[in-house]
Length: 553
Image (cartoon, rainbow, N blue to C red):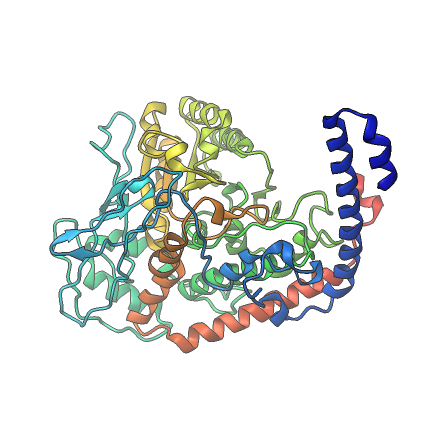
């Protein structure tokens, strides 16, 4: 390096700087390669405690590579992802704290200045027959207040769109209690406690307490036993399987995310805060419906039967990976489960889903007595800004194909907040312009998501036309392991999302109200799923890579 600098003495200053920088990078690369070798030898014997060990506040660059657990790992440990930023509020779906009869709402400030986060109150469980405070608005990105409705209303083409802001359909509040009618006084009713594990008794109890949701409760597959035991839970109880799978997905996310931080896999994306979207929508689909996912819908594939071993095999790109190592981690696909392989470029799956739905329409014309299927495409609010989204919506509406456009509006397109993404009322307001039916739903309410998707699927099949669903939620985690969300959002808003609007907590509060679970049950499930993920990961890591002969298979 000294020789390079001496020889550059006669060069212009700009070239000297370039040579010096190149020499510095070369030296750094040598050190990094040595550290990677050390990491590879140490990672195979890493324990669960090491995977979840905190980093004691040290920054990513201030410790040896074998001990690299970035500062994101601290805030990403287990249930919460706590971060800090200077941006305006993101979607939080919280109940404003009421002082002197007036609610304190966040104030919009310059995005380049530090902001003060508004305080919110976690909904408290009240005694039976006491009045309960229920929020009538859904606080969202850019301080938008979205009205909440208890009526499932899919706006059809030709009908008047909602005046003002589209309402958010919700069945269950953050407290775990089901809402009354929009015009009714919201109170807690005496609970009828059904026998644990008796879905028919639970369904009857819900029907008696909330008759305005009767149609949804009767048709809700989450409240119906499966004809045979599920292989992953060895039980036919669909509702408890939904709860366990949401926990399983979060445990898998936590462990594999931290495994990436240790260099054991190359990439990962978590689903923290969006689990109700996966479970609620997947449980409302038919087994023959085709799924076109983006990259944050692993829970949909899990519900269809993809095992922890298969997830880990794909992330470690071993010889049992269905894609034979051809894809990045989390780019899952399974032909048997009708889950099309994930593609990194945004929006490509949207037009593909339209083509598949058009095929289903043509097949139905040839064989009217055959089984009817739809395609469902998942995408984020950012992907709705792509050309593929516009083309797909236009083709789907004009060709009248049976499909569902499912938008996960989690507040961010990587680091771009929604107020920098669009000026209109979210994504759902675009549906009437395409001549498409649509509904907006609370993406943290597993029952509301299930009801909306079930109704949309029914409408898509009966009318052979597309339906758009916008699920309002919040991305608690970083966009991916390549992202540090502390650079563009605030610690407090993520903490509130984890404490107040978290879909798993809401589901567990509901189960606790009816005596179907308690803290000990939840802790036991979490331990069982954590161990199951660790075993699957260790087994996948120990397997060899695909042979070269499989490259052209």
